[in-house]
Length: 440
Image (cartoon, rainbow, N blue to C red):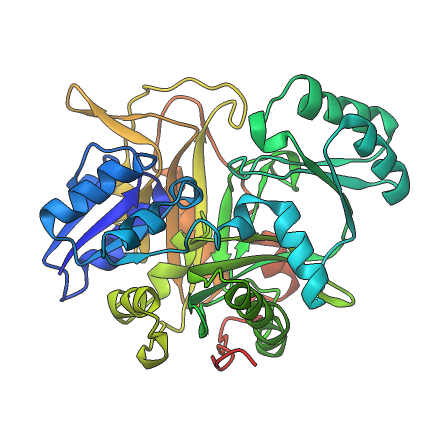
């Protein structure tokens, strides 16, 4: 079949790689794609936010499946538009995607179903937020209710930090309408992990776990970003805890959304804090994580396409995915200054040398071709991944490859996975997926 992939980042590049390798894919289109995706797909100059235009194109080329990468088109109702026209698409409807588009909605769902999560207050004004901070106490977490590209979360440790942060949300409007409402949430301690599951509205199939690194600087310092690196497996969730997440978090969410007329088909992503009392939900996403996808998909040894079609058709139970008994680490190379102001347009070199290292694959996040030269075009530029028989070797390969790539202002974290490896270099490498089953 012909497949249309919506998006332009490294997550979409990893998806494009996996889809291109499917024997069933005759043509692969990417809208709008990037310079790396252009190597394995036909680029279509349509914005991911142009829902109607994308549907028109899918009709015109007779796409058998459209795969949505980023959250914005989901929140704009791209799935609703495609379904209205009888076009097959992978992803949740606008109402189902509200589990990501509104943190207040997802928090209420957790409360209703008894899903373990942090205590929180939803605030529509600065005065409400100030009162909520006093009630929650310090440290506290301030979150934008809406979509903020992974950057709308800040931890405040005292009154001065709280006042400055609330200025950013309510006076300076740095997160736009996404910050019109905020959540003031208790600060949880533990180890973060990402749990992704394919869903067809009633059936959940877990993917290998991953761990994402949000802070821009080593040691988890600095502001939040869209993600500076990841690895799979997480090294945090063992098989029994992963099974607990599937049973106590993923299944109740799928059930609740179905009962509310918001049937979820696509990828349900639970961002977790693994505390001494067990896993707690930090957030839900309604799509493949980034950069977790870049660390998970290189481990895939079977065809991804049938599972995505199964989700779209509500028939995932017949599908099966198999995985390499390997680990994979992903290191993000960003522009200097990211997630704040940064410059672009700098030539990139060293990709061929990096690609010669065993187990290495480089995904393009924000690149472009200008006058025949590959240049930087955004904040997160490349995601360098390395596979290996264990997490330590995967990390070493990823960093060895990252060292061979150059562009002006190249920035990266140097400690992706180091803490997990130092605790136990083999922990969770032979991760056994919990048995997938229909929600209770």
